[in-house]
Image (tube, rainbow, N blue to C red; front, side, top):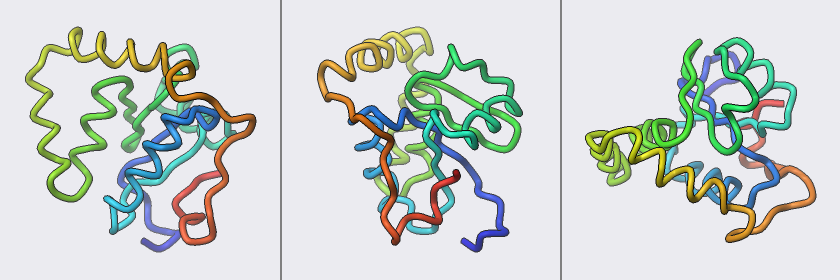
Length: 137
């Protein structure tokens, strides 16, 4: 994907969360065409995208998916991200048939405990030279 091409999706993630960083490292090789880009929630670029999509910071504490001017959070974001990856991960999107309150309940349990279970970093993840163009500043 060239720099002037608009990304199909931007994943905003908690840059100090080990689980969120692991998720980003999981997504990158499973999106070989580079349709998904990334920004830490703590970055100016993420704040700008959230404001444009109408997401308040209180609604976004772990993963947000921005597609154009629309943003989705929690389980909906995770499922839509999975749908954009190479096979077999799009099959997870079938979980969309589970009612959103149940999906979000499970998501919230993990999100609420992510630092205790997976730890946190002192600073946001820095991408390596091979993936630097996938990250917004």
